Length: 229
Image (cartoon, rainbow, N blue to C red; front, side, top):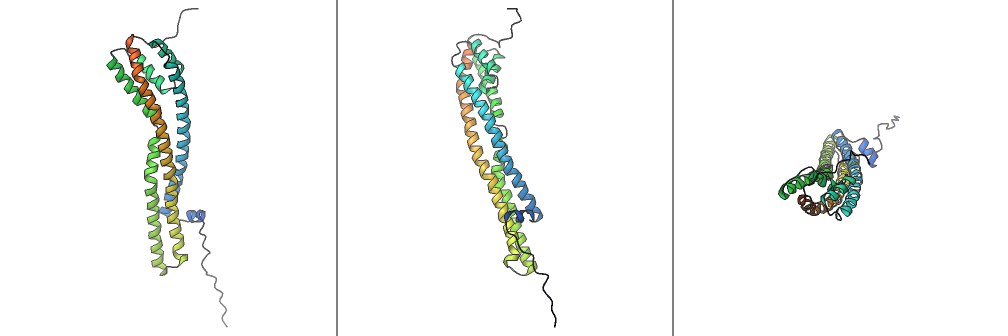
């Protein structure tokens, strides 16, 4: 009598997402962790941009509130000096460094406004890149996982669930993580871009009045007084 217990039974398949990610094939493993890093980066960028735009918007509101009551270039420059972090104040301070015709000052204001647009839009390109690229990176992982499933079918000469489930599972997880990175990136980009547009539109609308006020009387930025009291 031959008693040969089967000790070479297949190891139990764990199809939970964490196990599939940790035991995924090389390219899928790289893709998944790249997408995880991108998903984390989206939230970090969104948080930092929300803080930055909140700070700039508050400073700009305070400056605009004071600037609209300024009746002279000197009063406008004084308000800009008090709120030097506000984007609109930076534009006014740039106007104070130049003297010339309204056309020249308008050009200076537009150049300063472009600088502030770049300042407010920092890191937005990263959000848009993640939003556009993450689904395709996830799709690459999915395609590779499906190819791996077909290779396993060919090697095992069987299309049973134990053969194809791990490869198909890791492929679908790559797609899911790609969407998990892309969807928040799109939402954050649109929300933040709307706030940036509102901030810049307010500055652009007010800049014409600042140029007109500065061009009326030749003025320079107020300098600290060196005379004794």
